[in-house]
Image 1 (cartoon, one colour):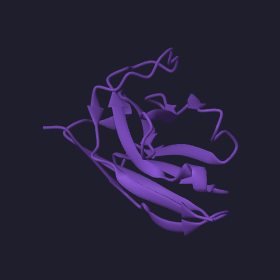
Image 2 (cartoon, one colour):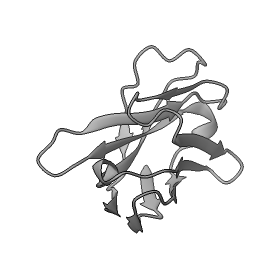
Image 3 (cartoon, helix red, strand yellow):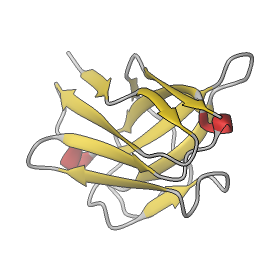
Image 4 (cartoon, one colour):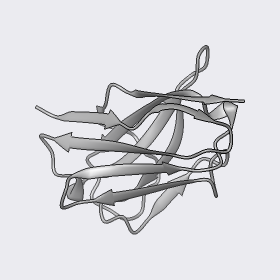
Length: 124
Protein backbone atom coordinates (compact mmCIF):
# COMPACT_ATOMS: atom_id res chain seq x y z
CA UNK A 1 0.00 0.00 0.00
CA UNK A 2 1.46 3.30 -1.11
CA UNK A 3 1.40 6.20 1.29
CA UNK A 4 2.71 9.72 0.84
CA UNK A 5 2.66 11.72 4.06
CA UNK A 6 3.33 15.44 3.98
CA UNK A 7 4.55 17.49 6.92
CA UNK A 8 6.03 20.89 7.63
CA UNK A 9 3.09 23.09 6.79
CA UNK A 10 1.92 25.87 9.06
CA UNK A 11 1.44 29.57 9.48
CA UNK A 12 4.20 31.90 8.34
CA UNK A 13 4.48 35.63 7.69
CA UNK A 14 4.94 37.00 4.22
CA UNK A 15 8.59 36.85 3.26
CA UNK A 16 9.19 33.84 5.44
CA UNK A 17 10.22 30.30 4.61
CA UNK A 18 8.98 26.78 5.11
CA UNK A 19 10.31 23.36 4.30
CA UNK A 20 7.70 20.77 3.41
CA UNK A 21 8.55 17.09 3.62
CA UNK A 22 6.94 14.10 1.97
CA UNK A 23 7.73 10.70 3.40
CA UNK A 24 6.92 7.81 1.10
CA UNK A 25 6.15 4.21 1.96
CA UNK A 26 5.08 1.34 -0.25
CA UNK A 27 7.20 2.64 -3.12
CA UNK A 28 10.84 3.49 -3.71
CA UNK A 29 11.10 7.11 -4.80
CA UNK A 30 14.39 6.46 -6.59
CA UNK A 31 12.26 4.95 -9.38
CA UNK A 32 9.60 7.66 -9.37
CA UNK A 33 9.22 11.21 -10.50
CA UNK A 34 8.09 13.17 -7.45
CA UNK A 35 6.39 16.49 -7.18
CA UNK A 36 4.15 18.96 -5.44
CA UNK A 37 0.81 20.48 -6.26
CA UNK A 38 -1.26 22.99 -4.32
CA UNK A 39 -4.88 24.00 -4.05
CA UNK A 40 -6.00 27.35 -2.74
CA UNK A 41 -9.56 27.92 -1.47
CA UNK A 42 -11.97 28.19 -4.35
CA UNK A 43 -9.33 27.35 -6.94
CA UNK A 44 -8.32 24.28 -8.86
CA UNK A 45 -5.33 22.23 -7.86
CA UNK A 46 -2.21 23.47 -9.66
CA UNK A 47 1.24 22.13 -10.35
CA UNK A 48 4.08 23.58 -8.24
CA UNK A 49 7.24 21.56 -8.88
CA UNK A 50 8.55 18.13 -9.74
CA UNK A 51 11.80 16.32 -10.25
CA UNK A 52 12.86 13.23 -12.10
CA UNK A 53 13.64 9.89 -10.46
CA UNK A 54 17.35 10.75 -10.19
CA UNK A 55 16.76 14.33 -9.08
CA UNK A 56 18.79 15.56 -12.05
CA UNK A 57 15.86 17.31 -13.75
CA UNK A 58 13.59 19.76 -11.99
CA UNK A 59 10.56 21.68 -13.18
CA UNK A 60 8.72 24.60 -11.59
CA UNK A 61 5.59 26.61 -12.10
CA UNK A 62 6.38 30.14 -13.18
CA UNK A 63 4.74 31.51 -10.04
CA UNK A 64 7.28 29.82 -7.75
CA UNK A 65 10.39 29.75 -9.93
CA UNK A 66 13.35 31.24 -8.07
CA UNK A 67 11.57 30.99 -4.71
CA UNK A 68 10.84 27.28 -4.32
CA UNK A 69 13.25 24.37 -4.63
CA UNK A 70 12.40 20.69 -4.82
CA UNK A 71 14.89 18.15 -3.56
CA UNK A 72 14.95 14.54 -2.49
CA UNK A 73 16.80 12.12 -0.25
CA UNK A 74 16.41 8.76 -1.94
CA UNK A 75 18.07 6.97 0.98
CA UNK A 76 15.37 8.31 3.30
CA UNK A 77 12.64 7.92 0.69
CA UNK A 78 11.69 11.54 1.29
CA UNK A 79 11.04 14.54 -0.94
CA UNK A 80 11.25 18.17 0.14
CA UNK A 81 9.88 21.48 -1.02
CA UNK A 82 11.91 24.43 0.21
CA UNK A 83 9.80 27.56 -0.08
CA UNK A 84 11.30 31.02 0.40
CA UNK A 85 10.00 34.56 0.07
CA UNK A 86 6.48 33.33 0.66
CA UNK A 87 3.57 35.46 -0.49
CA UNK A 88 -0.01 35.43 0.82
CA UNK A 89 -0.93 34.05 -2.62
CA UNK A 90 1.06 30.90 -1.74
CA UNK A 91 -1.56 30.03 0.87
CA UNK A 92 -2.93 26.61 -0.07
CA UNK A 93 -3.02 22.95 0.78
CA UNK A 94 0.15 21.43 -0.60
CA UNK A 95 0.05 17.87 -1.93
CA UNK A 96 2.91 15.50 -2.56
CA UNK A 97 2.60 13.28 -5.62
CA UNK A 98 4.45 10.42 -7.29
CA UNK A 99 4.52 9.19 -10.87
CA UNK A 100 5.93 5.84 -11.92
CA UNK A 101 8.26 7.36 -14.53
CA UNK A 102 11.87 6.23 -14.85
CA UNK A 103 13.34 8.97 -17.04
CA UNK A 104 15.08 12.30 -16.55
CA UNK A 105 12.98 13.84 -19.32
CA UNK A 106 9.57 14.66 -17.88
CA UNK A 107 7.16 15.76 -20.58
CA UNK A 108 4.07 15.97 -18.41
CA UNK A 109 3.91 15.12 -14.71
CA UNK A 110 0.86 12.91 -14.23
CA UNK A 111 0.86 11.42 -10.73
CA UNK A 112 -0.17 7.89 -9.92
CA UNK A 113 -0.24 8.52 -6.18
CA UNK A 114 -1.17 11.46 -3.97
CA UNK A 115 -0.68 12.49 -0.38
CA UNK A 116 -3.45 13.93 1.78
CA UNK A 117 -1.94 17.39 1.90
CA UNK A 118 -0.54 19.87 4.39
CA UNK A 119 -1.85 23.39 4.94
CA UNK A 120 0.39 26.37 4.32
CA UNK A 121 -0.94 29.76 5.37
CA UNK A 122 1.00 32.93 4.63
CA UNK A 123 -0.14 36.03 6.50
CA UNK A 124 0.37 39.51 5.15
